[in-house]
Image 1 (cartoon, rainbow, N blue to C red):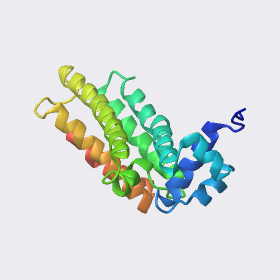
Image 2 (image 1 turned 120 degrees about the vertical axis):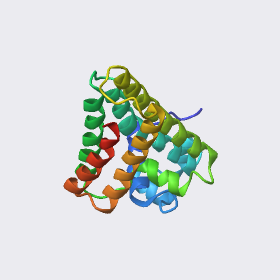
Image 3 (image 1 turned 90 degrees about the vertical axis):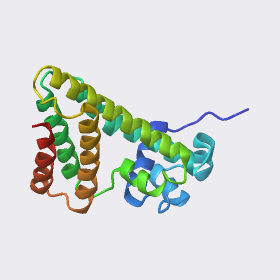
Length: 193
């Protein structure tokens, strides 16, 4: 008779996500994951199949916790410039609030795993494309309403703003100085002028 799982899978994925953020995929051993989650390696393998399976679950959770709220915020407002600015301010605040300079799991995964793992690359591409599409929709609508000049491609602006957001995350991991990050954000937002 098979034993039922006796742990909170969401809590385990959250703990693993934080472990991966601190040390990256390669720098996080199964022992580290067992310590972080409070589970034995057998339980981790039974629930996720492998370290990579747990990493993919952590990427999915990271998307839900960090990317989806940004996308929801973009879809919530009428003033295109204001809602995009709120996304940038919220991102800077999240970076600074972190304080421990943990890496953005998406950026870290892009640098460490995307080139060698198609499943990681697909998740990152999906998340980035969804964010870019949400920005595109807001920008295009803002252009129709006259809130954003229509002399530039909405797709190009959206792509640039996603790159700027990721750049802020990288710089925030190096130096989480809110004033410096906000100066960079404000410069990026001038693309909407």
